[in-house]
Image: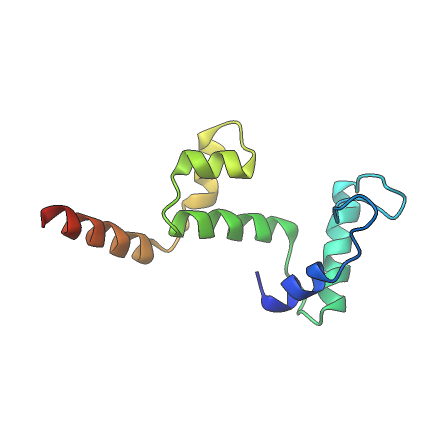
Amino acid sequence: MPPELEIALNALDRSKGGTIRKTMYGEAFSEKSLTGMMAHWCKQAGIAPGYTLHGLRRSFASELAEGAADPFAIMKAMGHKDISTTMIYLKDLNAEPMAQRAAAAASKRRR
């Protein structure tokens, strides 16, 4: 997550329910209105257009995978019911950091 977005989200008033996923009336956002709020929050934070909620989900899955999380743990964290859905998120990952960790782990096992 860009630092600017993290700062903007942390600055939000969460006193009415403890979550940013509720409107000022305490109701849940619809998908469309939450998407619009994401654009609004990014604009308020001075972040270039183009960041989306779906992009945050993809980044979350990528960070977990590149941090050596098991695909089934990622599936649970993402709230998916089927591993094939999770694998869609993981298919385009940068394999280099994961390959380096695997090589390091294999090297330790040989000692």
